Image 1 (cartoon, helix red, strand yellow):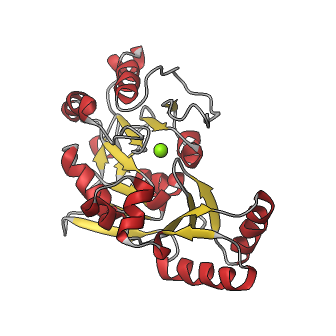
Image 2: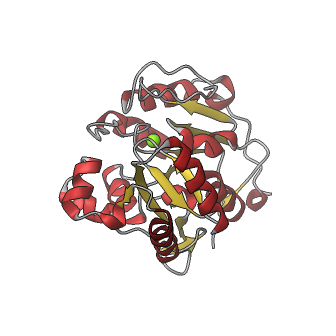
Length: 274
Ligand SMILES: [Mg+2]
C-alpha cells in the first residue's frame, strides 16, 4: 500500500456535522472541499453510515479518499494493487443481530432496529428516500436501534450487551449496537498504515454528537458543530461555531485554514521525502 505524505488531515462526521440534520443539505461546502483538495488536505468521512451510503456521499462531495463507516466498524482504504481494500474492525452484523434476538426473547424489552424494519419503516425513521434507505440497510458492523423501554432497563440492556462483547453508542438519531470500536479506532489504523505522520501533521476532527467524542479526543483540533438545541453535545470545541450544518462546517474549516500555523506551514518532513 502506498503511503501518502500529508501536512494536515480532516476527519468528519456527516449527519448534523457536514450534512444538515433535517434536510441532508450539503451544497454550501462544495467550494471549500475543492480548496482543500487543491491544498492536498484529505477529508475523511467518519460516520455511522454504511460503506454503501458513504460511496454515494463521496461521489456527491467529489472525494476520493479512504472512508470510515459504521462508527469505525468497517473502512475502505485505497491500495496500489486494487482500487479499494476493505477492512473490518468490528464484529459481524450477523453476530449483533443474533445477540439482540436472544436478549429480546429472554427479557422482552421493547426496542426496534433496522433488522426489524421494512424499507418503509427505515424511510420513516431516517427521512431518507428509498434508494438511500436501501443503502443504509446494507449493514456490516452495527445495528441502529430506538429504545422504547424504561431508562432502568436501558442500563440492564447495556450490561447484557457487554456480556456478549457488544457496546451501545448514542448517535444523533439512534443508539448503535456494535463491537468494541469507535470512530477513533479506525482513525488510528488509517493514520498508522496509510498516511505518513510527520511531527508537523495536524489532525482535525469535526462532529456534533456523543458518538463523535473519541474521534474528537484523538484530534489536535476538535470542532463541534451545533446541532440539536434540545440535546446539546457538551464538548469543548476549539472554535465556537455559530451555524448548523452545512454552513457551520464551512465556518469551521475557514477558521482552521486561517490559523497562522496552517496558513504558513513549516516544510513537510515525511519519511518518504527524507
Ligand atoms: Mg452526527
